[in-house]
Length: 441
Ligand SMILES: Cc1ncc(COP(=O)(O)O)c(C=O)c1O
Image (tube, rainbow, N blue to C red; front, side, top):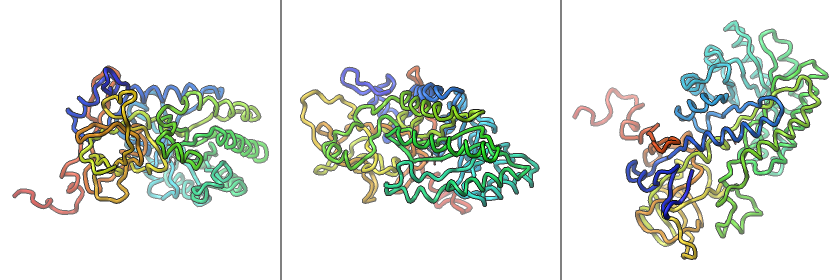
């Protein structure tokens, strides 16, 4: 997606500088060919599992309609997290049988809405969820499939500060068996599968190996003791994007020198997915029939398919103030380190300096980078913040500003705006007034 040609940065063959001049900054640029390449690499890697493995794209990662439409056309399924997102996915070309619905707590009105849309695969994290799903299915005279969420303690999260947060979601092993029995009793429900999520940007494939073994053990128990064979085993998301470095204590010194491996791709997506699929194939051989492997991927599909173009607007000491904001890339720059590239190629041997990158709002936490090693910057310089596709546009807020435009660059070098930059109408559009202030004057 990103190359230097004659010292100038190109995005899929288009000059980053020219795009910035035409579109203005800040602006998100998505690369159709990178998105397609990521999806295809992950699908190829997962196919080693033996039967066609399923990518169920996690739509909340980035639910731009243009992105969803492409993924639907390439054969992806989608995990949706809200009735409106479900409706959007349908409009973007996903058929209802390629959608699954999940929320941490299910609500009766949402369930009725998504079941009415024709979605038949629903995730449950609790007995109460199962009862609600059954009630909604009865009320609408439908049959639905249930996937039970397994709590992920013990897959590397136990010692992590995030471990205790993960423990509030999903069923402990002993409860899962009871809830599965409850599903079995129901003439409205079928137990379709089990699912888990071990957290995003999992740089070690060993955690997946442990997860896969555990999910297969649960599958064996459900099939053997309860005659509940599973259609699918869903390992969740978390496959890491190759261009984001996740901070760890052991990397602190390298991070301090801005020498983290995120400056180069960390791994091949295909190889990473293949490793998971291999361990699944070995473990799941004991299950007959063998459930299909499902991966609910977000970041690995979309993260590296986008960049955020931003200009330096002021330099004050070590701080370079850019016109983008952390409110468009909300993940902490201390926890996730992404590549930052200048639009002009740094010449070998040319002095570099450490800069902190400040966002454009007066939010003290509006910091996009700390101690980033860059060539000497000047006001007006263009910077490219890489791996800006995941949890960015979909989580962006217009705090002290407006959201930037989003463009999709096609493989043939053309581009189109898929979301225009916000204007005043976005600040007034949903206000409950007859007319926004100043209208008609
Ligand atoms: C249940 C579930 N599945 C999948 C994902 C996607 O994860 P990732 O973007 O790390 O692949 C998420 C993200 O939060 C999630 O909550």
